Image (cartoon, rainbow, N blue to C red; front, side):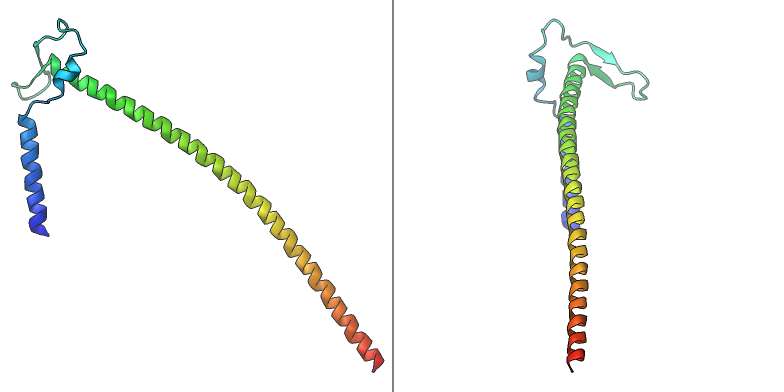
Length: 136
């Protein structure tokens, strides 16, 4: 078990290292929607970063922002779907509560009718016993 765990860790480390080295392949597709003259290979230095060799190209910034936009759209769609599901569940909950109250009321009526029936049966039994005692 530990060997598999360690091998998986090593594999994931290797994949992360390779992903850092490989450039993103989808860059050309995303950037093809923008006019070529707006996209320049100008490098903008990141400020407030201790590593002075860090810099971001305009393509990378646009790619990052388009990914963020796509991600926010997906989250907003998911939020809307969850909101609709929540409303449906609330409606079902209210319907079930109403039905529960109705059935509870009906159960109370049946229990009351049953108690009344038992009382009538008890009176009838007592009457029969009294009549038998009078006849004897």
